[in-house]
Amino acid sequence: MPTVHLIIKGRVQGVFYRASAKQLAKEIGVTGWVKNTDEGDVEIVAAGMEEQLRKLVEWCKVGPTHAKVKEVVIEYLEEKSFKDFEIRR
Image 1 (cartoon, rainbow, N blue to C red):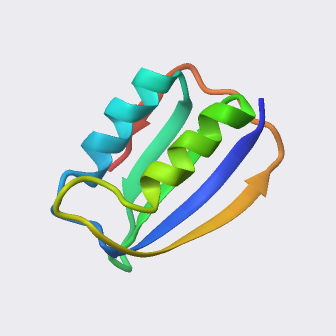
Image 2: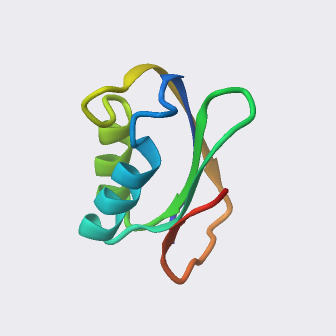
């Protein structure tokens, strides 16, 4: 399946970004993972159909209610396969 690597920059830690991303991923059928980075960003690697990934990317540009997203860096990766969508620590 198509796979994307996202770095979400802004006020994205401490606002339930990872939990909200996991919930959305499950709702739209995307697999992969999400984690906080040491730099204060959120990182996501996700696999799914093009339309599913487009929905995820659009959501990431806004995020949950208290997030203030400044930028989403998108990189397309070689296709990967994941069993589910998880929060990594």
